[in-house]
Amino acid sequence: MLRACLTGAFAHALLLLGASGAVAAPRDISTGDMFDFCAATDIETSQMVCTFYVTGFLHGAVAGAGTSRGGLVCLPNFFTPNEAIQIFLRDIRNNPEEKTYPVSVTMSAALARQFPCGKKTK
Image 1 (cartoon, helix red, strand yellow):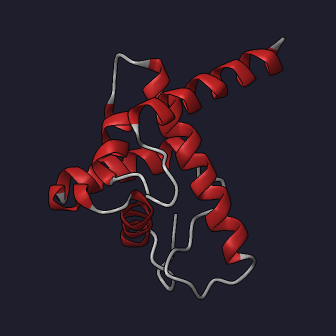
Image 2: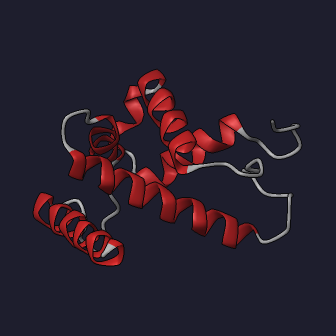
């Protein structure tokens, strides 16, 4: 039952992304679009889109980094997507001119500013 519910929610989120024009290969989602998804307080589907994107982004960042700590971003152990979302939202509120950039760029930059390699992380 849980699997069916998650699958349905995931399908709904994908439909929303497709209908909004946010997902179109090879175009990246803009930071402004993702900011709106993540900042939404009354639309559960928008928050799911945000959480799914950030979770995938973090999984990719961890997989891409492997065990190396010499990259631009060194995430702390047990770092959660919700923490990443809060960092992203705060960073874009502080840098609104970045809303036109691809979200893959600004998400990386926000995390790198918070967790640069070579600096002790929490």
